[in-house]
Length: 124
Image (cartoon, rainbow, N blue to C red; front, side):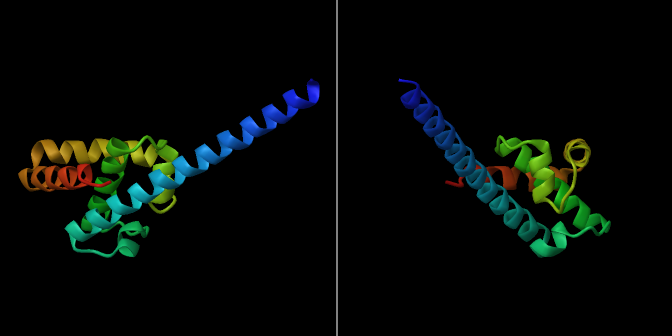
């Protein structure tokens, strides 16, 4: 009886690991799609967007991608930051606040954000 229980618990643990890995990959794929869409909208390459540069248009694209990733996935802030050039969770929080402020004050940013949000909702 105890052997069956141990086998069941082991199988259940393996199943949970498989589900977590599948979920992580699925979210990672969606974040990658968001990154491609955002970089394209800003007219830059993915590599440039994920680089550590502090040029305003590069930072804006990276921060926009972080906000869209946060709003459209269930990934943790740390995971989103990791997929955006190794940034930490605090950087993701700052990025989201910054872009939300720009959306409120800059009509061009608001239009771009709305356009990207709609395109992301169309993703499978």
